[in-house]
Length: 452
Image (cartoon, rainbow, N blue to C red):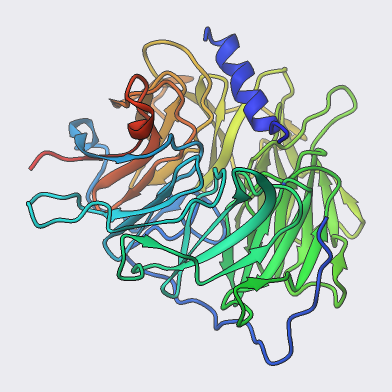
């Protein structure tokens, strides 16, 4: 199996620090897309929280800048293999996360505090390698993976979110997504459709309710010019996704009436001096602007396009050869994204020029390493992990200096922290590994909470 560009990037960043073609088919006769899902008011149902993938949770009211310094490790759920980039979803009292061997896990979101508690509640059969984050919608949890350890074909799998009454559950249905694995791209469920990207450079769209069979063919396929590790983002009838050819792609969310579709337009992230492949950055859409990161840039595009097939950014970060990591978070007029060992903060509207630098940097103490974890914003606090085994929290507002120190630091038992923090109901959930533990206990879902 080919090695993903993100894997190469993380490896390179750690070293510097010292350390996804399948023929499409139209929807079968009589099969209609599922109804538009109703947003859940007290849960984190998908990667980056919402369909706009802004990484901003406006529902959190417990953790704030005054008490976040008191966070401590409340409990740890052991998995069979490490968590590689999969970020937890927490819905209706259940926390979901995928381990690298393609197993989807469901744990009690509040942990197991008595002898009658069952942990995990259920898990899937092995789906092959997966770095995808689970998405929960209308009682179904979706996850992307390759078919098996010996088969690289991409698969979208759908399970009952409440489980199947057994400890190990088979999927309700699966979607065939090409001859390459789905790696870090996570499912997006919007307006009755399930979208996911694969390493073969294609965006796959399925009816979210399946097709009435165990294996479903895509209703349509969006074609890009590179591999896709980016998670699709849906806004105003458009699906945005990044590709490793250095472009942001904008497709009609309904398809084009054919099995294979080209984009409405694409946004160019590179420049004349330096290629800037997108890697796995997920677009964030807020107030009519699409933000996406690449190897050496953060770029902002008009979500409506520019009237041409190829569009330049409204503004872009200053290119100074530094590495950007993870996906941008957007809240309250600012954009937050990993930049080398820090989190950089930009004005969402730009700086009045085509090239903009950060307004300030969020820094953490201890050993320097890349920030590949995407920032999360909740109740005035920014959270992100760093590849030094640390998870940090900072005030979302400026501190008065160009560099602002963390107000809380938590630690996990592995250096690589590529999972992104999920902050909901007074708890911080994040996945990683347990370096030094036996292989069958090497992955963990870590949950930080305030002391009782």
